[in-house]
Image 1: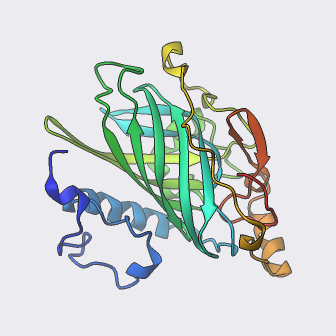
Image 2 (image 1 turned 120 degrees about the horizontal axis):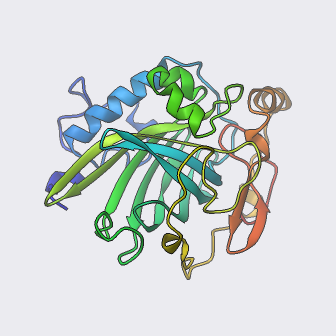
Length: 278
């Protein structure tokens, strides 16, 4: 990677010049990016703060098969459905792993979540997809749960609608992606959301161009998807469970597809009552 500070937190902090005082509420790798990246992250957080805040049920995870879009080269690009599986560390944190493909190539993702935030590293598989764009490089993703993507991105409403974000249930993850290569540096916005109905890996968002077929030859990682032990599942107060179910009726029933097996999952913000592979 082109910048040695990319993998270490320096004293410059976020846009205001300070590391947030509530740094304990962030995943450990959240700030492992340089100053330029953190400035864009700060603006993304400001956008999310303008929407209605959402609570997180204890034990919930961001697991699911997500679709989405990202912005680059002055255009909006689709993100076909990608799988994200999670393992719980405690009531608010855990690890996340997944895989998928897009118009660059096949990729795996790995990282952590904490409360409403996801810090992921997206690693492209060399020799897949677009040889001009795929350098076998890594992309750092920093995503925040957002109750209303339209509210956070009013100027992007046409793109969100074209790619199938439902106007009556526009919850999802909004944030930034960051690439550092010797001859390319990129920082821009992106969104991920769970479709109203479960979808398989590779499903293309509504209105998006079809990804070339050669990028779909993905071989899942050799390691099995992580499972959540029974003891890890945390009880959720009935009042909170009812409130979250009403707030996110479509998101709460999403499923993850892993190596051909469909298992029940509970996404971020939904009540958790499970002990299966996710």
